[in-house]
Image 1 (cartoon, rainbow, N blue to C red):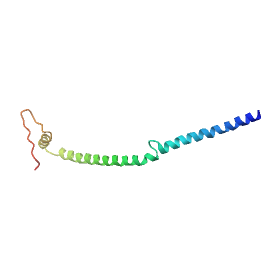
Image 2: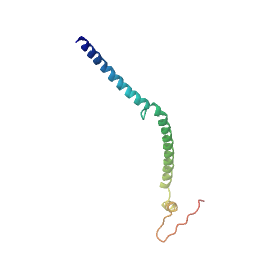
Image 3: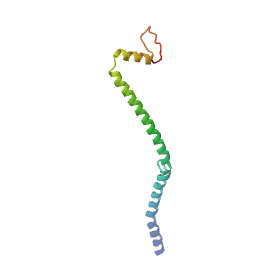
Image 4: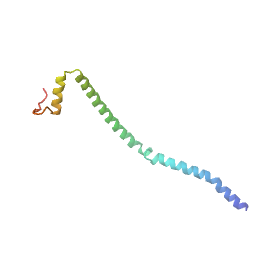
Length: 103
């Protein structure tokens, strides 16, 4: 009887540390081999660098277009219409659009 109680007490004393070790091992493995773990850090940083370059290019294009829009706001409406027709190659019915090179 005494041995049985001693063995059961021994195993009960091991349950909490065993569960703790299992949980820590699970999260430790996820931190190393998971999709955002240490082994994936270099790939994520490379992807971030590419995205930042694309963002910088898009912001540059946006700034350039905003500058052109500001210039168009101050321009003559006839000039704006002429530029639009030249870019879109569009006109009224029975009109022919002929592209020409820039001066």
